[in-house]
Image (cartoon, rainbow, N blue to C red):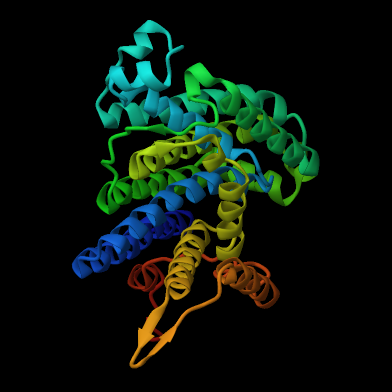
Amino acid sequence: MMGKHAQNRLLSYSTPVVLIAILLVFVACVTLTGDKALGRMAAETLIRVVLVVGLWIFVGNSGVVSFGHAGYMAIGAYCSAWLTLKPQMKALFLPDLPPWLAQAEWPVFPAAIASGLLAALVALISGAAILRLSGIAASIATFAFLAIVNTVYSNWEGVTGATSSVVGLTRYVDQWVALGWAAAAIVAANLYANSASGLALRATREDEVAASASGINMYRHRLLSLVISGFFTGVAGALLGHSIGVLNPDSFYLGITFISLAMLVIGGIGSLSGAVAGVLSLSLLIEMLVRLEQGVTIGAAELALPGGAQEILIGVVMILVLILRPAGLLAGRELRLPRLGRALHPKQNPTN
């Protein structure tokens, strides 16, 4: 008979299957409608899945709230622009790029990988300093990192275009491309969470003193999780740039920082399934409210929310969720295959 530890690991590995199946059904339903606006919404939602799952790899396992991941996202987005824009466009918008980069014209997939690797490298360098802190001090340091990145990218005119938008990126990211990356992020996050490093990091999240007394190197495991997290956050930035075709430093600052953290908290910071559930629920709510603001015809009447109602109602919903479900919608639980659970834990036959 399979051991209990092996049973638990097999159950945990069913979580990505369930989550990817949910996202696949979501994309298939949106595609069947033939609505281009819904298709763009689905692509944006799945890019948020990559971002929030990347954020969860660090925040969910370490317990340290990070306000700096939008900085890694900006690094990945601009790296992809440097590698994929046509040389003529770079000469126009980014005249101070080094010659080898100014003439580069990479395929989009290697550029996305390179963007993630650059963000991961920056995460390694920044995390080496920031993660020597703990608790609120580490969170404030991550916000300082975000402010530094935003200031640099908003003023480095010849390399990032400063506050002027960089245009001309290939818009190759649709809902299916974003689904592939979302699936990759979910699988990687689950593998890390169930690895020796992930388990050790969650032990430090629960009790730093006891974990340290057990010989767990908290700093090393936090740094590893931040590097993996930075990779997928950087890829999310590249995907966002190639989804809308335009880059601006303000797209990777406070707005996306707070909405990604809100999605993580609403879904439940304690589980990977909660991260995905938070993205889907809040994204669908935002889309519904946007359409209501534009006006919806019901019979002979037209219903339209006043301008600005979207932000107010989202805030109200978030407050209600946190009051009624303080641990998030899934309260730290993972979605798993029920039949697999019953097969691994069969009822004992009383005649045996």
